[in-house]
Amino acid sequence: MTASLRRIWGLMYRHLALYRRSWPRLLELAYWPTLQMCIWGFTASFFASRIGSSSTAVLGMLLGAVLLWEVALRSQMGVAISFLEEIWSRNLGHVFVSPLRPWELVAALIGMSVIRMTAGVLPAVLLAWVLYSFNLFSMGPVLILFAVNLMVMGWWVSLGVVSLILRHGAGAEALAWSVLFGLTPFSAVFYPVSVLPGWVQPVALALPSAHVFEGMRTALASGRVDFGQLTWAIGLNIVWMGGAIVLFSRQFRAARTRGALLSIGE
Amino acid sequence: MPQDAIVVTNLTKRYAATLAVDNIDFAVPSGATVGLLGGNGAGKTTTIAMLLGLLIPTAGTLHVLGHDMATDRFAALARMNFSSPYVALPARLSVAENLKVYGHLYDVRGIDRRIAELADQLDLGPLLNRPAGELSAGQKTRVALAKSLINRPDVLLLDEPTASLDPDTGDQVRSWLERYRAESGCTILLASHNMAEVERLCSHVLMMKQGRIVDRGSPDELLSRYGQETLEEVFLDIARNRQKSDA
Image 1 (cartoon, rainbow over the protein chains, first blue to last red):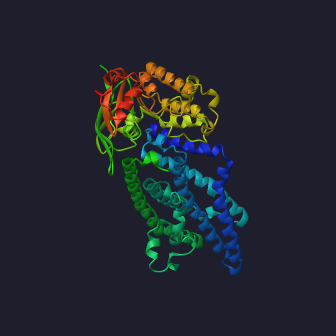
Image 2 (cartoon, rainbow over the protein chains, first blue to last red):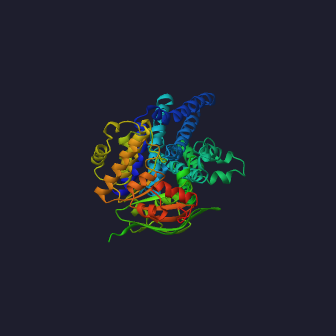
Image 3 (cartoon, rainbow over the protein chains, first blue to last red):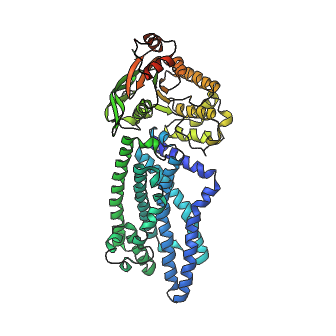
C-alpha cells in the first residue's frame, strides 16, 4: 500500500472504528432513508390506487426518486458529518499536523461517504422491493450512472459546506444537514423541470440532479436511456466539482492564515 | 558539527492589528532540547503552530530538518510530531485504535509492534482497550505522548506537555522525555510555563514576550545574567520589565 493510501485508510479507519463500537450510529445511517421510503411509498401507493392503469409507473417514479435523492443526501452528509466528527472531537489539530495532504483528507471523507451512503440506502432499496415490489435495479446499468452523478453532486455540495465551516466555524454546522434539502425543489426530484415557473427553470437546469431525475423518469417510463440528460449531468458535475475544489483550497489556505484550524469548533 | 534541526528567520505573524510574533530568529541544533518560555500571549503557541504548518506566517521563513515549511512541509511533517494537552484525541476510540489511526497517518510500518513498544515504555498496557475519553488527565498525557512518538520523530514539538498533571505524573513524563531524547537523539522544542521543567530538560532557553525573543541562552547563562537562582525569578524579571542590571 502506498503512503497516500495508508493515510487515507488511517482516517477512514478512525471513522469505521466509531461505527464498529456503536450500533446506534449504524442504525442512524439507515433510519432516515428507510423512513422516507416508507412514508413516500405508502403515499404513492395510496395515490396510485386512485389513478388506476398508470399506477405502477407513478409508484415507480416516486420510489425511484426518493431512493436516488437519498443517494445524493447521504453522500453529502457522509462527507460533511465525517468532517464535523473531527471538529467535535477537537482532533483537527492532530490531523492537520500529520503528513495527511488536504486531497487525502477529502479522499478519506469521500470514502466514508460511499460507505455511509451504501449502508444507509441499501436497506431502503431492499425494503422498497419487499413492501412495494419496486426493484430500483430494473432501470438497468444506467442506474449506476444516475447514482454516481448524484453521489458526485453530494460530494461537491459537501465540499462547499466544509469550506463554509472552515470560513465561519461551528456556526455553519447546520448547513451539513440542511443545504441539500434546500436544493430539493430545484432538483425536479418528483416532477419534471417543465412544472417549475419559467424563472426557476434555469436554476434547476444548472443542477446535475435535475438532469438525472429527468433521465430517470425517461428510463422508467420508456426504458430508454436519455444520453443528452446524462451528458448534461456529467458536464455540470465536472464544472461544480472544479468550483468546489477551488473554494475548498482557498478556504483551507485562508484557515491556515487565520489560525482557524486549531480554534475551529470553539 | 551537527546541523540545525529547526531554523527560523525573521518570522512574523500578524492578525489584523495584533502582532502575535514579531520578527524572531532562532535555530535549534539537532539533538538539543530547547525551551520556549513566556507568559500568556507571548507568542509561543503561535510560533509552534507556524512550525507545524498549521499557520501561515505573515513574513519570514521556517526550515525544519532542511525542508522549507512554506513549500515542502509534508516532507518535514512525516518526521515530526506534536503533543499538547489542548488538542484532544477522539474520545470514543480506544487508546489502541487512536494509536493505530496515527500510525497509519504517519505511514508507520509494523504498527501493532510499535504500539506494543510504546505501551511497554509508557505503561499503557492496561489502557489500550479503554476509550480515550475515559482516561484521567495523567493517562491522557501519556497517551498523547505515545501518539507523538508513534513515528519515532526526529523533531518533537511539545506545548505544555505536563500542564494540569500532578507532580508525580509530571516527573514521570519529564523522566521519560529525558530518556527518549538521550536514546533517540531527537530534537525537542518545548513550550512551557513550568520553569523547573525547562531548567531540568532544556540545554537552551528562548524567552518570549509580546511576540519577541527578549533573551536567550542556557539556563545557567540566564541565571547568571539576571543574578537569580531560578528560571522562575528570571521569568518574573522579564515579565515585570526589570532590567538585567536592576536584577
